[in-house]
Image 1 (spheres, helix red, strand yellow):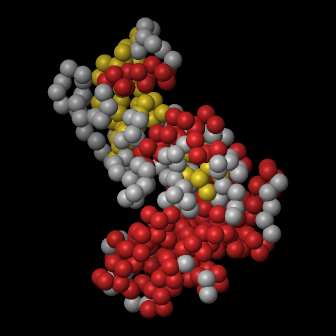
Image 2 (cartoon, helix red, strand yellow; image 1 turned 90 degrees about the horizontal axis):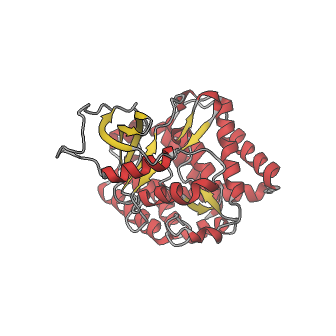
Image 3 (cartoon, helix red, strand yellow; image 1 turned 120 degrees about the vertical axis):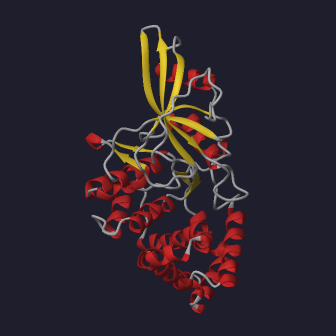
Length: 360
């Protein structure tokens, strides 16, 4: 993503940033712990290409003067517009909330927030160090990321009631449930009406299974609600984790942060990795085993095999309702056809098998 190198200074009229100079100055003073800082000018800074995020992302180079002389720093401006779905809290509000209220309590590394609007319309973060391409992650990288996920879940395990102190966190299985079901039902109706994508619309049995999935949504979430809740990243996968030099991993993009059973984060991590990357260095079973071993070792949490199998199936069905049915209704047909093999193997076939096992 290349950005114009035009310099923008406070005495010019073409200031096109969502924040004010005062916002930025105050944030830099807090971040660098130096009250003598005065920002003199801001200019766009090109960022390396990265995988899509919710909203707009731009780099800036900040030139400032302090008591010990001039300085500069590179920062990232995120503008998150709207919500992840109509009727839900703004995604930007969640991310600002995490950095402002929860980052000090998180047991993993995150970017530092310089400043941000209370509504989450924009926030300014430190630029992450150069990281390895997630498509080139090794087995050890995956195992470390799963270990960090378990550490996060352990820290907030069974604290769902306490997390009500942060009302902006997503609660997909509780207060947000009806919003997701309505969106999924409307999306399936659209698929049937426009007869696309053909991977679904041309298969009557598949349509019937998805109707059943939506109609029995309360049955889908029942085993998940019975599990202890924890803090969820919501979109935890290698594309949102910077694996910097020295194997230090930094987790970012907290727009989907929420509360629920930890298996929901694990489903996202495994399936999104399989969706984006053709060949993973370890299998789904190995990743699941790593997570379960970590939770047992750290918190003494153990699932019997039949219980784990059940919550895995129900988590898979719920994530499909929550994230995929309406996505399939609006994704261009050619794109879906190019990814048909991954779509079938990662989502459609496993979800349908889960429906057959658990809802029939």
